[in-house]
Image 1 (cartoon, rainbow, N blue to C red):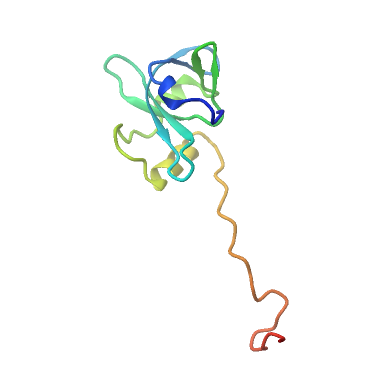
Image 2: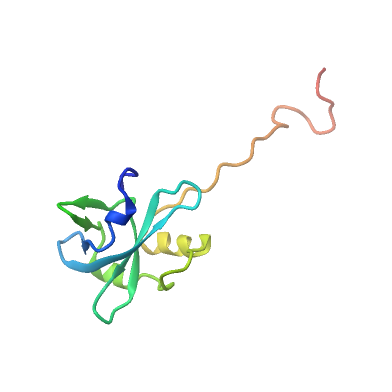
Length: 124
């Protein structure tokens, strides 16, 4: 999703799956803790339904609606963490796995001992 979209403009918009079937209405938008970029949308799936989280990265805003590249059934089966609370990193990971999205592992720390035998002093 483009990071220049104001997340407040997503709330209240209709959401559709990849086949054009209506999923529901965007209820809340969750921002990435580190970047502040919109990362998740909670979509109200019916009058008495629950909110289902969908990732915004592969989604797009088309003609004033949120188009989600997943089937409606997959969205409705997403883990339910409730809304109005912060998503933990573990919950986000569960959601990424649910949608089959790979989450890159953090890069390994730099190896300062590369090319040097253990026990040898560094050259001065």
